Image (cartoon, rainbow, N blue to C red):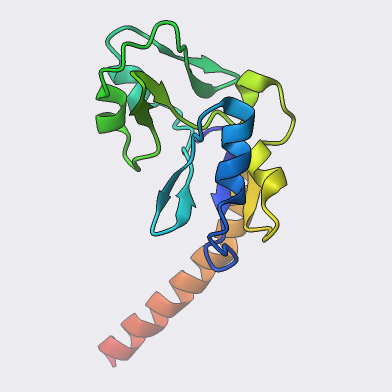
Length: 152
């Protein structure tokens, strides 16, 4: 997993579009795709399929985040096909994806700052593990109780 990703709490998202508007303002084109009004963010894959499939090596790593080199990209959309969550897209013959605003030298991604709902968070992998651990324990407890019930 990459050191940082943007995560969304869909229960807090009001589908206001502020994150998309701010992203477009900063980058010229919104790098956020939406599904049923809720934003989808690049997972910044460690072994990024979009980068691996690019026939012209237009996607490179910057601080372990895949970034598109607009000058090299030929707009073939192979990266779009390879993305497991559909977070990369081609527009005007150039691939676009979230880079956590690394290519514009921001400390916090513009979308996270723009989210008035506080639905977006930039988190590190250690933080993600801390969030997941209690959920894992709860799942194990539920599963073990279910197995005990089946066996009795």
